[in-house]
Structure formats: structure tokens, C-alpha cells
Length: 246
Length: 268
Image 1: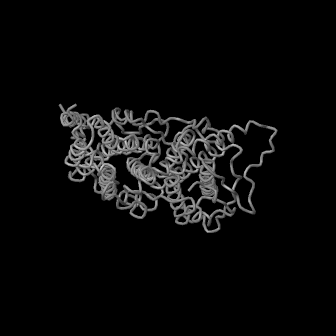
Image 2: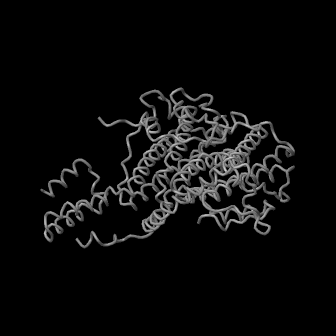
Image 3: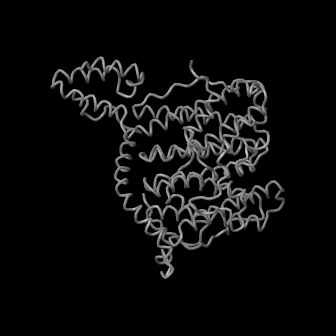
């Protein structure tokens, strides 16, 4: 009898963490309702032509990603802007000796990243952050190793970013839609990562290497702060991510 | 009301009920100790609390989803292990790739089993597999081309399956994130297998790709989507093909099971 009312014995580690997460999620279920409502208001407001549209103006010299689901979408939009700009440059100024097969592969990826960027821009509407200024001074676009090494870093970073962001969306309504959309994109980023890694080291285990997949068979997951710190080397515009869900 | 008879009936209907509880002994101890101390009228309430623990709403969706994922991982794990054990299924040049994939699928099986146990659930047993699918792929473990074609089908299915279940895991951020971390590994696998087979690493339209047997078309139906959340992706210079490639599509649980069941020997 007393056992029924007691917390389970030997409870710790994952189980305990899961329970804590669930309690947090239960809270968000309630908090999420108002957040979702707010999002709907924000997204419907784009029909108002007479509004002076200048959402999320830079605070100081930093672009604010915003909060809630919109903040996460802007975070993804920022990363897709970076990737799209990179591959656009890669194809515009091809490295010496780029093969036909490599040109096809990199052109495909460029188009995918542009599709992702334009999707987020359209989905965010008036809530979208402005176009970011990139900084590619560290990349030698004429050098295959430099270009493919950067591509590999960007794709792995993108995979880890989406893996870490999924849990930050609200649990209901549009949040669920965004979670599914992020899922549709992250697997394509992972396909890119594997393809680039195979170009660098064909038919090895690198496509899904031990540097990115751990002993449990899990890929990397990073928080927005971790991702943006790494990406900051390539983005000139300052980004304020302090209002993102945590 | 015969409590012990009721428990026995439940045991018949659901052999895993004790796995869902702490243990058979603990369950009986709880019930019998309880009924001695309180009025019989209150016993159903006690049963109710036991069942909430065993089949509780909060965990149900997560456990069911993890069991579903485990079944798919069993399939992939056994497929690659048997392929590597065969002398002719895997071309020498492809062994490093297949060994790496095999390592991950084995790790996924263990991770899902461990996670299920941490949620007080008993992992579903491994089904009996027939990778020849009743003879349709009779040379699956002797012909490298057939082996790779099945590998592509399994990996592309795995990516769609995990994607389709994300919404069922939102009650736990930890489980959701882990599932996403498995999902992207499956996508890396899929990309590499496709590349080895001479295809693009991404899926264009609903094309299963050159050399893929017709029965694998179910893996690709529905991938041709070019509108996402009402946004038309195929615009501004983005072709219809690129628009479909840029977004992988989820697959419903039943559609995934229909594919997996081709390779599972059904108990008679």
C-alpha cells in the first residue's frame, strides 16, 4: 500500500530527467495556448497594408530573433540565409577543378537551401528578421578543401541546430506544424552532410562518422546559443537570441 | 469481485502487464496488502491507480511510438548483421559504410530498449524476419545490388517513419530530441546508400530511382510535395524537382508497418 504512494525506488538518470521534462511540458501546454494565439495574431496581421511594416527592428546594432515559435523560425531562417549565401557563392565562383558531378551536387544543395530560406521568409511574413550580412573572409572559394570543409561544417551545424530546436516549439497548434516542418528540413540537411562528407572521404565511415554520431547512435544536438556562437564567425550582422525559448 | 481472477484475466489479455508494472510480485503485494486494510468498495480505485501507472495517458503515446521505432530498428539491425555475415551480400569496397551503418542500428536497438525500460515498459520482442519477402528478393544476401536496394528502401523508410512520429513525442523533450538525433542518422545512412547506388542523395518527386524494385514504390509515394504550409516552394527559380528534394515527407505509422510487414513473418 505504502509503495503505491511512494515515489518509485531507484528512480534517477533518464527516468528522472524525463519526468522533469514532462512537468515542464505540461506547463508549456497551458502557456502554449496563449503563445499560439499570439502567433496567429502576428501572422494574420500581415494583411494589414496600412501598417508601417518594420518588425523586430535591431536593438542596438543586433537583430532580435524574437520569442516563442516565431523566434525559433527566425533562428532557422538565419541559418538558412547563411547556407544559401554560401552555396550561391560556391556556384558563382567555382573552385578550380570542380567536376561535373560536384557541380551538380553543389547546385542541388544551393537550390535546396534557397528553397528553405524562401520558405521561412514567406512563413514568417512580417515577423521575419531582415537579410543578414555574411562574412566569408575565412573561406577560400577557389580551394576545394576550403569550400567542402566549410560545407561540411555548415551542414553538420544545421543538423545539430534543428535537432536541438525541435523541443523548443510550443506543443500545440502551429507549434506542432513547425515541428513537422523542421523535421522535413533537418533530414535533407543530414543528407547534404553525408553527401559532402562522402565527397571528402569517399566510401569511408565519415558520412556518418564517429565525430558526429555517438556510441548510442545519436547525432549531435546543439542549443541556439551554441549554434549561433559557432555561426558568428560567418555572420557579420549581430544577432540577439536572448528571447528565444529555452 | 474477485481481484485475483481479474488480474489473471488481464495477464491473459496482456502478457506484458507485469512489465508495465514494477514486477508481478510487487503488483500482487500491492493488491493483496491493500485489500486487507481497506473496504472492498475502494479496491477498484486501487486497481485504477495501478492501471494508470501501467497504461497511463502521459506515457502511452511515447511508449507506443518507441515500440514502433524499436521494431523498425530490429529490422535494420538484423538486415545489416546478416548481410555482413554473408560472404557475398556486401561488396568489399562498401564494407566500411555497411559496418558503420550496422554499428548505428545495433546502438539504436539498445538505446530504444534502455529508454523503454526507463519508462517501465517491456521492449517488444524482435519479430522473425524474412528479407526475401516471401521470395521477391530471394538473392538479398548473395547479390550486392539487391542488398543495397533493400538498404535504400529501409533507410528512406526509416527517415519518413521517425519524421511521422515526432508529434507523438512532444510530451517529453528528452525523448523527442533523442528521436530527432536518430532520425538524422538514418538520413545520413540513406544519403550514402543512395550515393553508392548511383543516385542523388535526396529524393526527387516520388521517384524510387533506377534499379529499385517496383514493390519499393510505397516508400516514395507522397514525397512529391512542393507546397509547405501553404507556401509554394517551386517558385523564384526553384524547380519542381528541387522543391520536392528540399523537404522530406513523413509517413504514417500504418503505411510504414505495411512496408515493414512485407519482411516480417507473421505468427500463425
